[in-house]
Amino acid sequence: MACPSDWPEPIVRVQSLSERCGGVGRIPERYMKPVESRPWLTEGGEEANIPVIDLAEEGEIGGRVAEACREWGFLQVVNHGVCPELMEAAQEVWRQFFLQPMEVKQAYANSPATYEGYGSRLGVEKGAILDWSDYYFLHYLPCNLRDVNKWPSLPISLREVMDEYSREIVRLGGVLLKMLSISLGLRQDFLQNSFGGEDVGACLRVNYYPKCPQPDLTLGLSSHSDPGGMTFLLPDQNVPGLQVRRGDNWITVKPARHAFIVNIGDQIQVLSNAIYKSVEHRVIVNSAQERISLAYFYNPKSDLLIKPAKELLAPDRPALYPAMTFDEYRLFIRTKGPKGKSQLGES
Ligand code: OGA
Ligand code: NI
Image 1 (cartoon, rainbow, N blue to C red):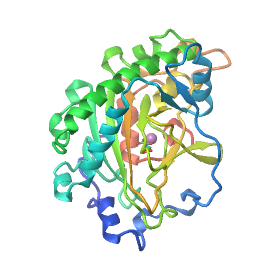
Image 2 (tube, rainbow, N blue to C red):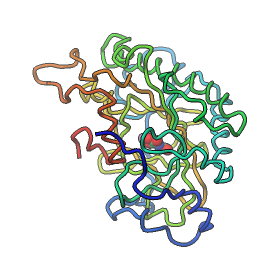
Image 3 (cartoon, rainbow, N blue to C red):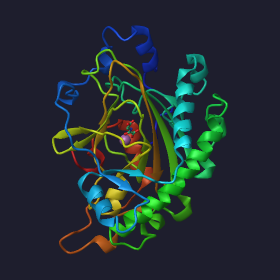
């Protein structure tokens, strides 16, 4: 099974829908979620928040990291060494990209063959209910997949800013993999080696969530877990929207200033034999402000077999997953679109 090379029906930009309706009116039926998956926006705000880990803290943070990865599958890191000006610049170049006229953006329209470029849906099921967002998807690593012509040429500083930002994310990825390995009781280079050493993958999805006149009927991004290794999310500093599943509740993340939200992806759930959880999350939209987030996916080399670490197995803890390459795994998501955690055999 290969991914089809074209979309099953004409692509509609959510940004155009949003601009056309000027913040009032009804959303097309295509974006209306079934009642049970609609967000419950009137809910009194849950006070809980995902754990904050200060990377500059002296002393032992392993225990708190382990707890966050077991209990939440999410943490936010501060004092991570990425300069705040660079984080702001990265948000800003993409804001400028999405503010450009539609013809400029259409030059980068993507296809389901690689997903690279400007897109408005995930999955190729004809007639599927769609999410209220547009996005831009890019490969950074491995180098042979990096094609600068697929990176927007405007705004003029985008390529340079994103090159520096990407290098910083890859550096931080190494730091986090070491931290996670130690917190699992493994050799510090265990996860990095399992990811292919220097040959990791890194790709960026910039999410653009336009204003929505009926935010209670739809989602900016449907519930899903991230298929890769781990994700570094730079959330919008001004507009909340990310919700993380906690039992039957959805917790709206309150990002700390200049924090990265880090979450465990399915491949680390597999490698850790489910000691660490790749937790479902989704994005809600609102009628007042658009929202932009940068999700950087840090992944294992795509043709390596990923399987539970034998150090973490015991007679009463057998391997829960078969060995599979990330290439094989990802194909499932790219054809079906975001569907909770069904790809790990959980419903
Ligand atoms: C994603 C994601 C969350 C957000 O792109 O996988 O979960 O806040 N994004 O945009
Ligand atoms: Ni995600």
